[in-house]
Length: 374
Image 1: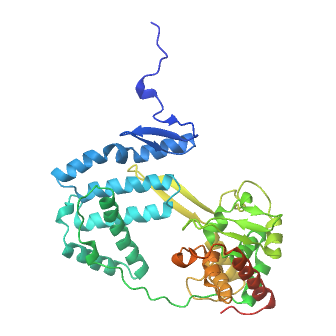
Image 2: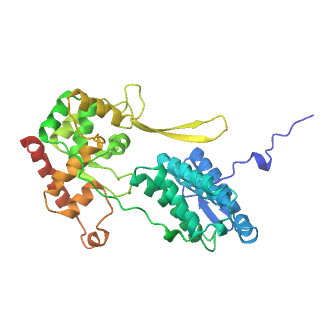
C-alpha cells in the first residue's frame, strides 16, 4: 500500500511568511505579526495563542460564570510570557510577576471570584506583604504587579470592572544617599582589574553603564572611528549615543574578539544571560545569571575597599551620575542615565548631544585629576 506524502492540516506550520519578512497569522480578521525569526515567531505565537484565540470565550465565561483569580492570572501571565519572548520584558521581571501573582492566589485562593475581591481583602493582602518583606521596594513591587494585572484586564475589555485597587497604595520610599567611589578607589580598581573588568569599569564611569549594558554590548554598537558608543537602555528603551574617552577606547581595543558581543566569560558564556530550566512538574523557570556583580565584588575585596552593603558595579553608574551632575545640566544627566524623566521639558529641547558630550568629557577630568565625586 502506497503511503501518501501529502501533509495534513495538522502538519502545517501555523504561520505565514508575510512580504515584509515577518511571520504572521490572521486571527479574527486581523493580521498578527510575530517577528522575522521562524523559531522565535512560532514560540511567540504559541505563547499568545490562548490569549489571541481564547479571549472571547474567557470574557464570555467571565460575564456568565464570573472569572476566577486563577483564570485572570493565567491569561495575564500568558500575555507577559509573549512579551518576554519578544524581548519586551526581562525574564527576571517575568519570574517576579509569576511569583508575586502566585502569592496573591495563595492568599485569596485560586478559585476566588474577581467580583468578590473586597477592599478589606486588598488591605489584608498588603498587611501580609508588609509582614513578609522588610524592604519597601519589594513590597511596592508586589503591589505594582497586582495593580498592573487589573489595569491590563480593564484596558483590554477582559473585565468590565475591577476591584478597588486604589484603596491600597505603595509605601513611601525614603531615598538614602548612595555610595560613590572616589578617584583613589577608582585607580585601585583599575590597577587590579583584568582587561575585561577594566573595560567594564571605564564604560561604567564614561557612559554610566550598568551590568546589563555591559553584558548586552556588541561590537556593532561601537564606532572606533568616531570614538562613540550607541546603545539603547534596556530598561527604558531610551537611545544613548556617547563619546568614548581615550582610556575607554584603549581598554576596549585590548579585548579579544570571540563573537558578536564585547564581553564573554572564560568559559565563553555571556556575563549577563538567562537560562531556562524545567522542574519535575514541567514548570518552566527562567534563571537570571549575572557574573559581573560577584566578579566586581571580589575585586573590591581584593583592593580592600570597605563600602556599605549594596555597593557594587552599579555604584560606578552612580559615580558617573554624580560627576555629571556637576555640569548643572539636568537634561544631559537624564540622557546620560537613559532615564525618561523630564519628559515634558525634553519635548522642547530638540538636541542634547552637545551638552551630553560636554558632561562626559568633564567627568573624565574628575577621574584623572584625582578629585572626589562625593
